Length: 299
Image 1 (cartoon, rainbow, N blue to C red):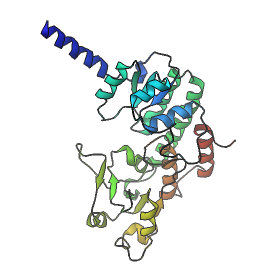
Image 2 (image 1 turned 90 degrees about the horizontal axis):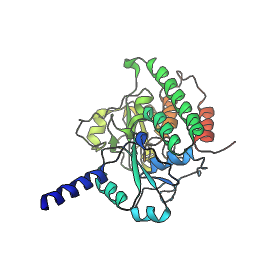
Image 3 (image 1 turned 60 degrees about the vertical axis):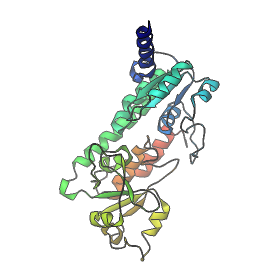
Image 4 (image 1 turned 30 degrees about the vertical axis):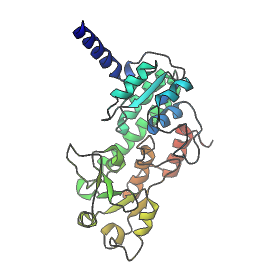
């Protein structure tokens, strides 16, 4: 009996800790919540939510889930997780114990978004809305793919993504945190091993050795530092040629923190900075269309 009890407990734990992909979810939830801000942004976009001009980190509509008890009190019946390397076994078990279903979406790369949008649209019973969003995303990604293919490899610019006030944290080339560089036809010089974390720290000497053609940053303090003639980075190629850009951040970062659907805007914006003579689109018009469709802003 003791062994049977142990087996039953182990089997129950396996069931509770297993989170199926959202493509397999067949329920009709009344209230969906995302585990992360990026998922909540996608849910709210499908839900015709009017995004604020700037998303606050404490905005309950988008913030990360703090505890499952709050979800139960709010009547959430489905939690959507970003399928990543995170270990969600404990979360799955807690959700199962209070009767909340969970499923996972692949959102690491932008080319996964059209399918993710259609999957969520089916679950939310908003297929028409989801089709409009997915079609826009797919068409713009195809456009960027075609433009990128025209840039010879030897003419592609090396782009360093500087994070934080020191600018010495960056993201690996394979990371979703810096995906806009690759989509925009740039080369991310931060190559990492398969076992490395998505984000890495450098020292000044390493950045000086990399000497990128272009620097993009999400930090205004570091951006201003690069314009200081006393900066140790004053002789970097990107600085001497004025190829330094501050990533737009309304309603949130267009590249990272979190890497979200806004990466599409980030990729179109960065492509224009890198290869202004190669683009075939009106960036201002694309931004307005995106905000009207995805963020429900403007007319």
